[in-house]
Amino acid sequence: MKKLPNRKLLALLAAIIFTTGCSAGGGSTDTPAGDVVLKVGDQKGGAKALLTAAGLLNDFPYKLEWSTFTSGPPLLEAASAGAIDIGGVGNTPPIFAAAANAKIAAIGASKGQVEADAILVPESSPLQKVTDLRGKNIAVAKGSSAHGQVLLTLRANGLSTKDVTLNFLQPSDAYGAFTQGKVDAWAVWDPYTAQAQQEAKARVLTTGEGKSNGYGFQVAGRKALDDKGKNPALKEYLIRYYKAQKWADTHREEWAKAWAAETGLKYEVALAAVNRNGDLPVKIDDTLIKSEQELADAFTEEKTLPTKVDFAKFVDTRFQGDLA
Image (cartoon, rainbow, N blue to C red; front, side, top):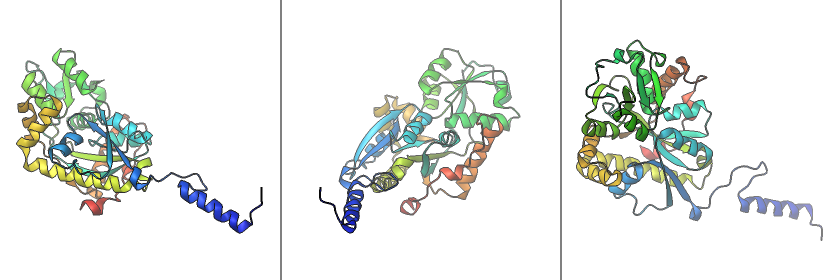
């Protein structure tokens, strides 16, 4: 093989590095624009149903792949592992993911009403106030927004999670345990709250009002954020998702019908959930970060989390200007 002059050899190496998208240090590969596939994590009746109802998916300029999760924590595990690129969760899952040093970042936020974030008890339950929960069993999805609400509610009433028994169950399993009398209470969010109220005659013991901050997040995996080829797709998805939230807020009956059709819920259940929610986009700012940090610190103080979490390190504001 003919030996190349040093200058030509360097040029050839540079060309190889450029065309493969690699670096000498083995960095990430950027996806070519025409090959972008945005992998979205969703929950039943979540983003896909909302975007479809709002008419914002038909002309989406990138290919979308959807995966469905039972709640936020497993969704964020998938995002951290690179199995999905982005997904929506409540206020608590990012904190638990951060405590596990997950490779994720919150890139968009919304805020909603918290009266649907409830601790439910059976209609005939003798429990009448939060302090009556001492020594009782509460079903809740671990690391979910409901978990955060339970913690803050107990603390606000002079109790801690050590004063109750938390049964960590996903919503579908928790509903069965609740209706069969295997737990004393259930901490959950809509539409499960509305469903339990209407179909199981559940009674609201307390809500998240005055305790939960009501934030929800669109969270991306670091692998997707580091892929410059995927960043335009992430931005487009965020813009459309928050437009869809605004649409739902002004088309509640239409959204409730679409939600019911997607989830199999009764229309009356979906409408009740829609009418008391209405999440709307907000800026990721110091106020939001402070509120999430306070929630994280509460979990650390309870020793639910093994160490302090610096929530600000798991926030990425690169798209805030586009969302304004």
